[in-house]
Amino acid sequence: MAKQTFTTGQVLTAAQMTSLQQTAMGGGSTTAKTASYTLVAADAGTVIQMNSASATTITVNTALFAAGDTVQIQNIGAGVCTVTAGTATVSTAGSLALSQYEGGQLYFNTTSAAIFFDLVQSGSSGMSWASVLTRTTIGTGTSFTASSLSGYNQLMIFLDGVGNNGTTGKYTITFNSDTSSSYFFTGGGYSTGFPSTTGSGNRYYQASATTSIDFQEVAQGTSLDGSGVIHILGANTTAIKTGLLQSGMEHTANTTDQKYTRTLNFRYSGGSVISSFTITATAGNFNNGFCTIIGSVN
Image (cartoon, rainbow, N blue to C red; front, side, top):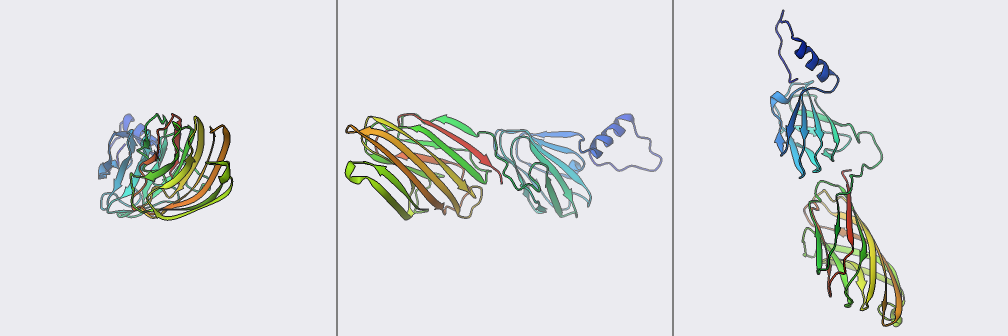
């Protein structure tokens, strides 16, 4: 039940006593929310339960709660719910971004400062990966975009069975549809006859202030099959994001069996959290394939 003020001699009903017991055990009455919400004084001693498919926030302001007040926060929706400091201060040893079925307790030390005890991640040295955010067929166009990725500090993007219709070019990656000179990468790879037998051997790649990141090369041929993984760190910050990319492919071009691998370290200096990424074929069209994305809030 919500926080109550009782008077001397007042007789409590059985329902009131049951509700008080639930609150003392970490339960209590639940207020369901389906959109971003700002806490009010009446939320003291209750459970705020978010249920939204999109990213949401629960904002905490000052001068609403007394020292010792608590608010339980739960997220049962697919969208990440982030506990956000408004005019109050909110500290935590875990994460303020709650994936589906995560929750915690907001405890007020003072009227303007609270601690969020993350019941899933507080004190844990491991990562809490969300379930698969999306698994999508890439299709047969010249580009593919995955969106609604904000709220996750780490992203893992898996690309498998990515083919091309046989036109020489390459696949590139951008974040947030940003084609400014905000990308930097360095690394190496190995080729067996790619794109011709004269080009075999070790290769080194380095680029700064470019408009995209090279994922992998595509040579002319009729049988193409590429795959790779991209691990992004700091995706939910406005500061510089870093990551690691690994890719490989095998195809037959001009009757020559060609194999190719690439490993790159990269950074992205765009000033927004990563909410989407786009993979583009600079020539030709994709020949289907799949994209799978998972995320971690810490």
